[in-house]
Length: 438
Image (cartoon, rainbow, N blue to C red; front, top):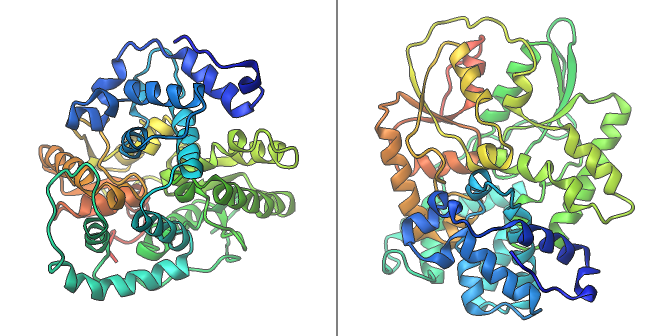
């Protein structure tokens, strides 16, 4: 694609990066076939190709974002299916992230939307506040039915519609908190390695059982696990809301404490059980590439970060203690298959450990979770969820496995089939308890 940035514009590292990405795009349209919003809505501007054109116009002409640009960028799930499909290697993720930052800084949203986004950015990365908000939401759900209904697939959902969607996602009860940061779990038997395990934000409130299963599985196989003290939210939630100052501050804080741990007792890896977080942590090196104080350290941390299944695939697990005939529908989270290009390892691990693994039709399409998307764009998110659940039902599974808490909550909202994390099944297969749902 031809671009016309001035030399002054290209002196900005972000614009220079955008220029490189834009020039790689040949507008072939392959991305449209795998873009969830284009598949649903059929609008060219709700496809990666259309959004790339809008972003190009905004950046090239150095214009403030228009309402039309914001509408179509907001509808993007950042699922990155387009990057998997693109034959030209267009790095859409870095382009749309830059667009979100520009929108956050230069576009004035309606007051109610600003307040909602600010609340999400403040509450979700803070587990204590998030737990409190879930307790409040549990009681507020009783009032949700009284909220007025809105038209399906609204172009711009109003505040009440978004609040209703947020309350619908809240669980009926919360499990007890998991172990605190600073905890160390020694390897059982001879120590084969030492890793840090990301504690997460929403996951440690909604499903601490996931990290507990990871700890049990790892220590059983000779891996010492540490929950690093003073670790923060990885920054993914605020990063995708365009609040880069907050996201980068969290990234820097994490880099400091993780490097201290790595340089102290040593770390073979920083393991992540929430693939949305893993995709962003692996991108720290890019996000902080222009930061003289953190660029090198950020690259080191990105190199240490691994999805839990990626790491488990590199160590020899004990033979499965039972041969299960359970049919597992494996839902490949977008952040794992498109963001991190990890597609085979989770399924191979499950198959080798006695499960019958089934691929889900249209597995490349997002389930509609996408961080805060199912709150901010609930109607599109629900359509995607229903489509995903219908495809899962075609393989008639006993359980659904996924590697991302957002996907798990989203899919569970549309089916009675138990939804568990891949690591819970692997823990069970090698001597742990059967996965529960609390």
